[in-house]
Image (cartoon, rainbow, N blue to C red; front, top):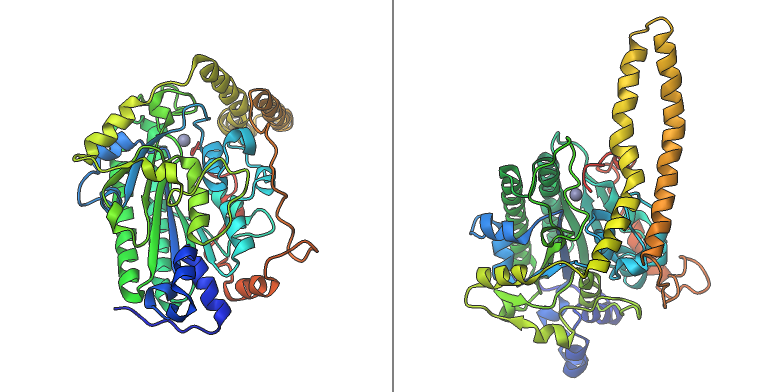
Amino acid sequence: MTTIKQVLCGAAVAGLVAGTGSAVVGAQAGLSTLTADWLLAAEHVLLLGTDGTNLDKILEYAYNDDSGFKMLMDRGITAATTIAGHQTMSTPSWSTILTGVWDDKHGVVSNVYRPEPYTTWPSVFNLIEYFKPEVDTTVISGRGLFTEIASTGGYPADNIIGISGGSTSAEMDALVTQETIARILATTNNPNLDTFMFSYQSQVDHAGHSYGGGSEEYRDAVINVGANWKEILEAVAAAEAATGDRWTIIAVTDHGHQQNPDLFGFSLGHGFQSPNETSSFVMLSLAGNDAQAGGQSLSYQTVDITPTILQAFGIPMRSDFDGVPMQADQDILNGIVFPVDLKQGLTDAINSFGYPNIGTDIMLSIRALAGGAGFFLESYALPPILNYLQTIIDQDIFLISGLAEGAQWVLKTVGGAAADVLTDIGRVVAYFTGAGVIPPNDAPLPLPGSAEFTGSVEALLADHAFATPDLGDSDLPLLLDVDPLVG
Ligand SMILES: [Zn+2]
């Protein structure tokens, strides 16, 4: 059933037309045809993220009708991608995905969160909220990184949903899935509202760190995420059927995983340049583009995702993006093929990727080790030592407990400082190995209310008045720093 949309004024129609990303069609068709249903449909973009998920494992375990991965491949275009030559760590790689620039620009080199990269290189949330504040933007994540990024800058996302609860990452992912489905279905109550949603699944990366990418646990996690995404895609189909709205769906992972289980009770899992670690993928199902169903792209990159999302809403590109809009760039469109056997085509692409050149490989390994040292000390090495000392303190043994207390104080003070120093050294090493060395061309987004602000203040205020962040569901402070295992 297609619902006829109520349109309040000409400006709203113009906004909706721009929102379809079909400015050419609108100009050719002329204003008299703007009452066509499809032009009035809201634009929705859903970005699905899964951490540390190897495409070859998806093809091995989840290339079947029970899986949302396969549903997405059937519905749109899939690319086996590689991030060889870039750090295979989570925060650097998600920063590339959510800013449209590589690490030589955003400069994020470790999982220690700093806001500066996202005030210098605005996130997709900031760019949408600045240029099109009427788009309802949402992040749903059990991981503090994404609620942080979405909160940073002058134009935060409207709905920042930090999911807490669940005793395992699989349970947390299930909660994320439920919330995502609820919000997709809620769009049927607000049929004229354009939306952008980012929904994040963590369990595959956790399984990779604990058991290795070649483990049964990793297989189960891939299957679980596929099942979660199937439910989400079914909710999208229900919303599309109810409203006639158009949904663009993009799926991505940040990096792959080493195959072997860890040896010391923790695993680096990824961070270096082996093909299993640099392996990544992009799936794009463009709203209304059935002609590309089942296709394979030979040229998508993870850095193209932010430009692609902006293009869907008719938002201008930054001049200094490294990525391009996948649905509009002619070179990328020329790189789409329709293999007889998609699974084989993707497997061939995965197998074609190797190591970067030896200089890049060594440089990035040094950067990963230097950048990760402080985080490693603070997250993995220090807590067990402090806990051990605490057990001695708790036993209240004459003199010994006092000594332990003193030792714990020294370690807390010096250990934390050492971690900070190591993190700083890591950033210096990162800079000299090429991270964050290229400054932006474009001016920073002006702050709301400042003289240079050229967006619509009314729209911005209205947007934030009507779409109050659902803080009842969020547990932002608790989420910070509680997830060191996702690397
Ligand atoms: Zn990880």
